[in-house]
Length: 67
Image (cartoon, rainbow, N blue to C red):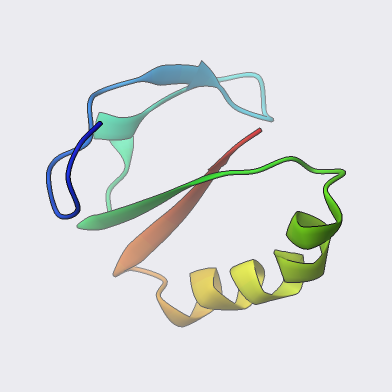
């Protein structure tokens, strides 16, 4: 497990668009990886907040959710 502030290990997963997503492809300097579950009530409750965070930090940070 990487320590806070340490570079995360590379990974590749299929995105919702069916295309592969690789961590190295994220253009923003900061990538926030969130492990979520789309039917979890806590995740559902925070969905609008996560969307707003992504809008607020567009071009500076990118949120990536892994279900």
